[in-house]
Image (cartoon, rainbow, N blue to C red):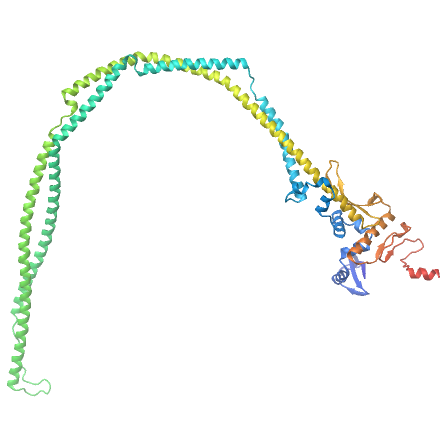
Amino acid sequence: MKKVYSEKWTKKRGSAEKQFTGHTVDHFINGVPNTAREYATCIAEITNENIFKLLTNPKYFNEQMHWQERRKLLLEVCGDVEDSEVIASNKALTKLPEILGDHSMDDFRKIIAARRNEINKELEKLPVRIDEVSQGLPALDEQGLKLHENTVKELEIALEEKEARKNSIKAGGGSAEVKNELAELSAKMLDYKNRFREEKESQLAPKRSELSDLLNRQTEIGNLKSGLGRKIEGLELDIQQADRTVAEMRDKWHLEDAKVFEFEDKDTCPTCGQSLPADQVKEARDKAMATFNQEKADRLSIISETGKEAKSRLDKMTAELAGLKTELESITAEHQEIGAKINAVSVEVNADTSTAETTEEYQKMAALKAELENKVTAADSDNASLLKAIDDSIAEIKSEIRGHQAELAKADQYEQGQKRIKELEAQEKDLAKEYEQLEQELYLTEEFIRSKVKLLEELINKRFELARFKLFNIQVNGGIEECCDTLYKGVPYPDLNNGSKINVGLDICRTLAEHFGINPPIFVDNKEAITGLIDVNSQVIALVVSEKDKSLRIETVEQQIKEAV
């Protein structure tokens, strides 16, 4: 398999010389040119291209792969360690499964880290809060507080006395009897007015009932009158129509009766034109006259019947109309009579305009009431100045009480502040205790990782003869950081000499070849830098810089043996 990397020189139009325009890569398999895709497909049939690089280049693993890819590959080749194995290997980890619950190790460590961060923030804020509350506490004077408390009690007693005195004065004092008499008189006057109204209503009740009956009858007769009026109007229209019908039938009968028989004597046959016999002409005339007379009589009979029926209806309606008008006149007279009665009864009901206030007895009580009210007003006027003085004194005492209570409130404020400080201090202790618990749990997780590191590194390092691998770094703060560093006899790979790097790389290639089940040739560059290579199960192509060789020369074991013989 061969790839040829060449420069590409192109002669552009209008230019005399070729110019460098890039590179080309040609692919060959057993000397046959192939496309890059065919070439890659052929390699893939042997093995994955990245795996091929790992197995053919001793320095590819350590110098070209990212440490995370190296770590992943080692775990894939050598296997991982189950959590249960790690816990079983260290008695200190017995409680770890219970602590983890349903969380994975990584998730649990994230939870701890997040909670520790929250607690640290809270612990930073709590001292500030405690200091703020402490600075806001009022200064207390126990002796002064006791004095304020006693003073408030004395002032409250004085306030009660003032209030009692005020209530006594407002209740009446000297005018109490007058106010009671006034209240009794007002009740008596109200009772008199109610009795007067009831007696008056009792006297007018029959008349009011009569008036109500008359009004109802007036409404009833009014409705009847309106109904008769509508009937009379309708009947008059029907009479007019019937009268027109009678007149029309009369005129129609006279017109029909005035009609006479007319006949044109024809003595010639209209068909053949011959003269008709006289007897036939007479017969035809007599027949036509009989038909005319009969039809005329029938029409006159019909007209006469129609006229008689219309006249009969007209007579009945005329008689009915006369009856209705007579009834209407009677109802109208009754309606007018009831209206007159209503006016008379209304006058009687409204004639009595007397009220309780117009009676002599009520006016005497009103005069007495006015006299009593004047007495109460005079008494209240005398007490007004006294009540004002008492109100001013009450206001002053209340103001003093509020002042002393404001001082006493400082004690409550102080007590609440102390209570808040204790709450914050308790919260601080609880957070510190929780933080300590988290530290213990974090320590267990780190102990788990350290145990897993030990087991895992032992498991991986057993697969290699020279190479050793460091998969975790212990940080200054005790934390664990993932890594993948190659060591040889404790020396990190970057610090090794070229020969050690090559042999460590061959050791890695050998183990990887066993895992992937393929042993491609291994190319060792700068072979002159090392005296001896470790044994591997693959063909080793050593590239050596020799001063005498000016071009590439290939030596095989067979050639060396042949030359030695």
